[in-house]
Image 1 (tube, rainbow, N blue to C red):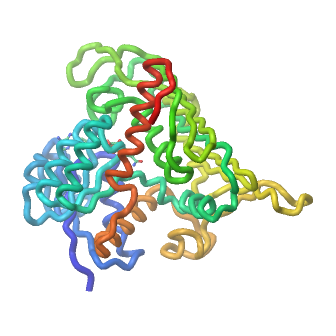
Image 2 (cartoon, rainbow, N blue to C red):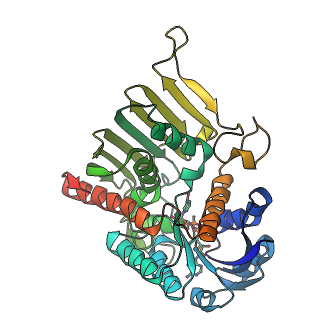
Image 3 (tube, rainbow, N blue to C red):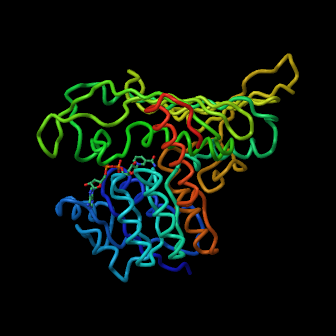
Length: 377
Ligand SMILES: NC(=O)c1ccc[n+]([C@@H]2O[C@H](COP(=O)([O-])OP(=O)(O)OC[C@H]3O[C@@H](n4cnc5c(N)ncnc54)[C@H](O)[C@@H]3O)[C@@H](O)[C@H]2O)c1
């Protein structure tokens, strides 16, 4: 008999939905000691909170996150709020002894992130940051291939995250979803939003970065603010490109933008090693491309691995070999791994402390762009 674990999600937007879906489905596919119970959603305004609770099957709703955290019947606080609220909510949740799952990026900057790490570690509560791309089976397989040593010495790591949704000059900043354009709510633009994913994956696959050299651009410098109604300066980076040295001696090249017309969410990475290379593309997320120089030269070439077999990461929990899964499943895997860690009393990566490393790289990238200089991470 599995034990109930009461979940309180704060934030009823895009991530509130992906996390709710994951908690609902996880025990249909994974054998877990804990059965997540959707106890409370906290969202704004009240009618949105009520309808979110009804649609996703929450037992109750709140409109004040402090009330949700104060409830004795909540075990896990799941933070799906804009970036500027992560710190305060996480620190309050840690002080209340709650298990915490926090959306990425961990914080607005490194100083805030450090406070959050200190809070969860002092409280001794289980914590995880939602860098969910790690848990797409093809990306997990990439990690297994790197760890196996098949690539040999790594020379290059290359990643892109390209979108085009902010090109219109009349798009306002601030408010639901558009808080991403408001530096006071987001902390930064594509660096904290998109590159943070690329950096987390890179640190996981290729180890720490030593130094970075970046450039950022804000193509549209003024936008109407939804909350004030006034035209206000835009403080975020619309695009960011940086290169870096990794500790293992390889070179990194990263680009993120919301001005790549035609691209909606093209996240790609490629790793080139002495013996082999791998590459991955979010738009074809169930495939991993692999090139092995040791193959017979007559048939040597990039092979496209359909990551859907029973011995591929996570796939034995789903349908039958050959049938693929998608984006939402990375969140199901995240919850499955987190609940397994909680049951065993083991930390699950990326913890707040792990995610602080990504935050440090983001901060070095922004400082480098501002100062036109190399920055140590
Ligand atoms: N892991 C990923 O791939 C991924 C993808 C998207 C977003 N995110 C992260 O998730 C977080 C949320 O992003 P989102 O896309 O869900 O944003 P969103 O705008 O869709 O949702 C945010 C929600 O928070 C609510 N909210 C704001 N202030 C509140 C408050 N004080 N109390 C209660 N609710 C409040 C808003 O009403 C909104 O519904 C961000 O940190 C973002 O960076 C991660």
